Length: 413
Image (cartoon, rainbow, N blue to C red):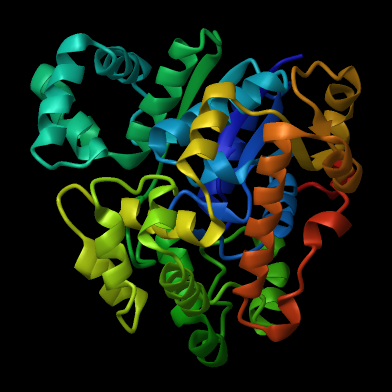
């Protein structure tokens, strides 16, 4: 069975995501498309704007055949560990190819950079730059640019860089997966909706800040150009009922948790090194997370890294737990939904890790690392719900009550 995997966050799902799925479906009409999707928290180090169950359903209605959850421990890690967890998860459920959005579809160039990144000379350059105070991502980009100046422009493209990490994982773990880059349209970090292909950042900013006013003044639906038509009623219902995360609630949670920790407790959390724990405690006395983050920003600690560290503080993710998860790889796959086309894939059970369809029995029976990671997934979901704008949307325990979506073929777009 030909199964193509995609790593995604769908935070939130928009026309760019639908375009990628449609392009892949046209090129490989007989293949199953399996999504490994970040759950309640995303790699930016914050809760997703909508919950994972809603986002999974939207993917199924727009071209995906099955959605499994990328465990929180990987979904909130740096690019290298995020990619390693996601690609190993997809390989464990029988995927034999990976497709990813990229600013370039030049696979040879991406493979060249992936191979070069493992070379001793690039690693040596990287270590020297780290000692000068650069954070890892910037150090690796500069080290690669020194050895492959003709590809320097490619190293400034965020989706291409993530694609390189997928290729590195494929090579490092001898997974032998085929690779299908798909042209990524639009600007990944654009903060406005002027482009016909919205970035996730721009769409989130719009939903947080502008949607209510525009909804009242526009004669046409303000989201028509940016989300698939089939999802407009669902979007509007969630927004009208304020069932989306309020970033301010989460940012207050960061300060609350940070003020509860001692320096010794922070040292045990993921990524807290070089005495930053003392600066962190001092910064956490600031009235807002934005002000605290400005106090902590440096060449070594980028905004993205600080956001993830804040997430580790809120979710209590220890360095030991993340190291163990990275070493062992994914130990379960949680099914969030599937279509009729994916039923034979599920029935074959050609998986090297458990495929979890009933959460409560799995949690009761599992032990060790898998249980620790499953508990972390639930903690992430409960905290995300607590950060919702509407009080009625803040209920906990959703992981226990959810049953995977089943979408008949005639219900798909």
